[in-house]
Length: 283
Image (cartoon, rainbow, N blue to C red; front, side, top):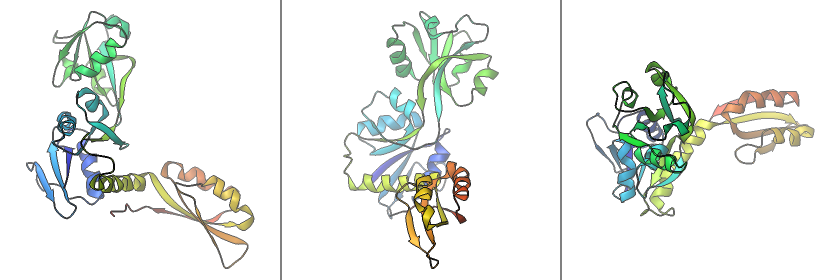
């Protein structure tokens, strides 16, 4: 039985739950439930603090988990990034008060930096030969400067609104660019059948979100040109029609490019373009 850890709260939690639900897994029925036995799919779901998931997975207690790349890097564990999930994008950045003289990363030398991600910040500074005192806080680090605990902060940034409202400005390049990922225990081999089944289901949902099926008719003389426009996720299917001058084409194309591709197909003579959403496979 595959043991899977999911965030019990935070910005990654609901997208992670939705992903698992769409993949056909059973979720908890009330917010106090910490473990879900899904015997039909031969898995156990464990609802854990996002910051702890990589620790449990790295120790081998849990087989796989959904967490953020930044949390994995900060965990100091042997958990392995297995696959990216494409949601929960954020950056990890430095910020200082608007009136502060701190404007560059080099200005942090000798200063106090408040953060919940000690290892990530320490590794970043060490790689640049900078020496700063790291002040560990478990949350609300944006208040630390105003309260006199730190001179600057390092924190996860999605829109930057929270930092701006706290009178802070962001400076320097991103320390880490993060997103939701699946982490794997070093004790679970990539050839493990339960892991492969889980990965296929999740990938099926991600593909269904990212692609659509595009069906269209095209003059036989223009098939090669049309297929070049819609090469698809896999090779498109080309079928003859009763009218021998026309062919039917089905291609799986990126949802984000759908409208542009339709315009290009109409320009080369396509007709009857139909877009269909993809249903994720649960096999």
